[in-house]
Length: 97
Image (cartoon, rainbow, N blue to C red; front, side, top):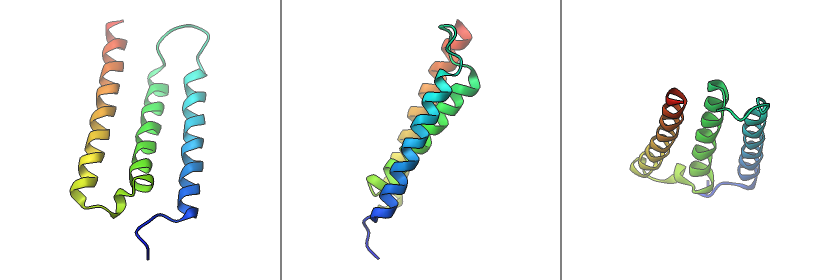
């Protein structure tokens, strides 16, 4: 077994990332009749899709699945922290506005 991801895994991951990108775009444009903040469900869907996409990028394209648990934990923790900051900023702006 090789430590590098195979062509099939890379293509499957790429197709998944593209599908999630389309899902994010569609969910963000569903309520575009007015210039208001995204509904909570739409913002949550975009953040969840973004988190999954970041995890797939880390594990497949950066090949962190072959790295030590410390490296994986550090990068995944940074992604979770970033997503929490984005979600917190969105919720703060939504509650303040």
